[in-house]
Length: 431
RNA sequence: UCCUCGAUAGCUCAGCGGUAGAGCAUCCGGCUGUUAACCGGAGGGUCGUAGGUUCGAAUCCUACUCGGGGAGCCA
Image 1 (cartoon, rainbow, N blue to C red):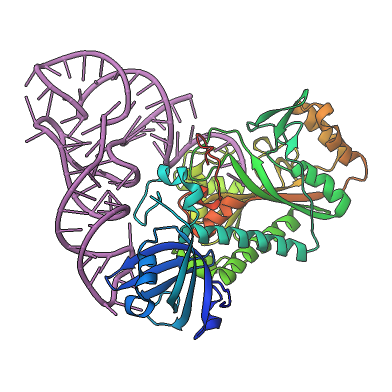
Image 2: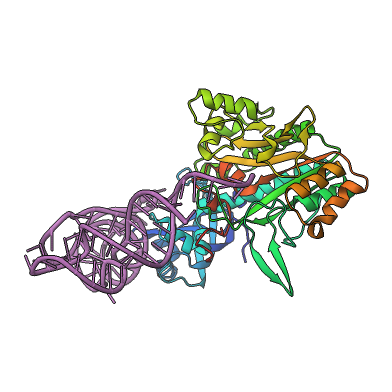
């Protein structure tokens, strides 16, 4: 028996014979020599079988292996300059585990529709594996940063009695004899949690039943929603820029191999350090008008506006203090200018759009009650949210960051769907 | 919901009024250093569906179905 190792760790075994357990990624043969590209989830390595060395029986076994056959390989590790990863394995023996006939995804090009129908197999490719690793590392970076800042993770419910913001379409489901909806944001629950634990964050799926089909939209996507008691708008924005730059720099440090695999220009990410540029909504509208865009104060930004604003800078840009009428009912008006709210959206560079939306929340009971009436929010559903302003209310702020958009930006993806293992999209629920 | 593009071999596509094509994949043969290996051969098709125009339709027209990209909305 040989020691079992992984392709990632194989450098520690130069000169030794080891066992690898994985799948056949590709094979090339040249009559009396075969090159097996074996992957095991940690990487890909080439195993070489020479007929004169392994003998007819084992050589014949190799020639029968097909793409994506699962297998156990025994072989001797060599450092080899010709190898992509620096190491190569001289094959000693191979044991097929599970066969694979007519594997659908070849090494050639495929269309989006075909690949999405085969997402369960598509994720085996080096590029998709790298993206999923980066997604996991981004999640780790977010959690580690917030944990180190004294935050407590709190998990809000996925099933909710109604909408948090009332604007977007919700997925309706039956909850025994009641109606329920899939959450579109855990924010209101996080506000309650912040009053209990001070600084909290959630990380989980949210759902939008919008008929959006663009490279920036998924029906089911993950959000990280921090909420902080006693945080002003300024505190909130300062936290966000430290948070985002930490996530980007952490990913650069820990995923250099993966970023190289997907061909990301990391010089664009290296520049992403705090502080980030800021514009007020007023300044943004004025700037857009000077650029020739048809926009008036009071209009919301469209996708082309956001792209134009973000393209001015080589790092994300905050757009602060939007008109009150454009934003959610719970946002705190600027005391000096009640027509705008203490909020900020963070626009990612390179056209990836809004990755963060955040604000200071209304903490005054009377003002919140007034907003309830203006927005026709039933107290039967939201009474508990009003209670937060009734019992020991404090100024507080929070934000939500979209995981897939963030990962798509860090990876330089064409579409957010590749940033999710099994994306749910308009007209696509399979697999 | 609207705008726009598309659907031809298992996959990626060409063909745009006159006998259905290529590359890859698969199978067979060759090759001792291949890197999406290469070379030779073989099999593989209700041209998305239904109508229409025409001597003749994958090709032109209409409707429908399914999908891509974008807008709105949002993260």
